[in-house]
Length: 303
Image (cartoon, rainbow, N blue to C red; front, side, top):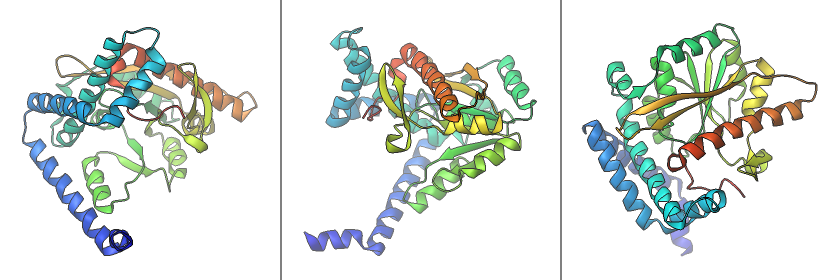
């Protein structure tokens, strides 16, 4: 056993394993790109159902999380059906992502419901020369968000956490080539610079921050929440726009601007951060209640 562990940790073995994983991902992406959109949706839904039945730990965690929030409101049968649809949404999203960068603007916008007033509103925010923080969550197809902004002509930077696989990192970069990327483990100072250059910064704010966050109420229970969005807004004066992509029954997506939060400084940075993040959590709670089967319940948000 010790020999096997040493082999597994060997840098050359690790390098080969990472490269093989990259080749597997590349082959998968090439295959998916050949499929029509409706087939991608149908196949993704089937894969999600298959995973729901096979991945017992994830299924149990999803159902537990749903019961934590909706246990007094929904029957066990309703909870089970929502949990299955959560997996369906994840499966579809996983297959839609490789297809997006090969789509023309016309193809992309044919799959998105939005109106010109929303575009004009986003441009009006940037006209104030403070930049804008576009905050979203793992709801619907969140991968479309940054692509959508770039296709509208907005200068966008996307916060990301790199993989330990350098081959996959380069691959993800190519797929997200319409936007600038900011590594949250190294270059967070770039966020202030991009906002002060009047650009948009796109981020997801619904992950468990663990020891790096602050405990704030989320569906009535304390959940560790990242302070970054509020901190950057207060430092630069940039508004936080809570925006989401939700999946519709016809395989299209709807773009929603849920609310805009303008940072206000009262003299206590910590209290101002808490006030903003609480409002962001309220925005997400509202969306999850409306689309409970489209949020990622498959991880420990409360711990």
